[in-house]
Length: 314
Image (cartoon, rainbow, N blue to C red):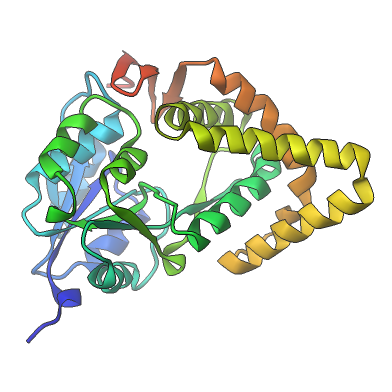
């Protein structure tokens, strides 16, 4: 008799383009599984590509009071048929065995808990590289203490949360992963599912991403925002007052975080200037309510007050 790790899953993947991740997931799903590719419009390029693969297309339509990502997730989850639900993104490489690892870990996850992980944001842009070490340290901490929830890897059982309420709330907000964490009894963070995620390291892209994350933190985790500010201030003051202690200590912590996550990048050496720099976009984001994401522009005034300012390219 098949064990719980062999139970079929519904994989929900919001994307408008067919990417390498789509090919990987199409190859990793079994005939018993359900692979739902969710897009915005019937004219999106992914529709034609999915027709040639083992994927079912769900057209979510244009978002009205939420982000396109949340709108797509809501449509996919509402359509999903299986008890075990896996949500992921199309902008990182999943690698062989990713879905099998999710199945096994979800089978061991306690009832009421959500399985997730955290991403390592990898950028070749100068600003992205400077901000990377502090992010990696935060990822290592979240993995160690089971606090990380990332929309790129989320798995749970249908009865673990009030799914209908979650789908309804997705249609009026922006923060899909943080919103789910609020509804679960606990988080199981898997080190084996950590992935490097390529991100735009330009000034415009980095600032937009920071504004979105900061707004999410203000609405769902204000204590986390305060702790980031305090840590950055502590590193800055320590560097000014006791550089011979602070610089090797912070650099060493960053090196340990990279090693713990299996990340082989030299950027851990930028930890000290990165912590000093992170204060500027963080403070800017505290007072900014508009940002760009996925070709659209949004105004996010409170958790459930979202305005789509730009519907993107037709």
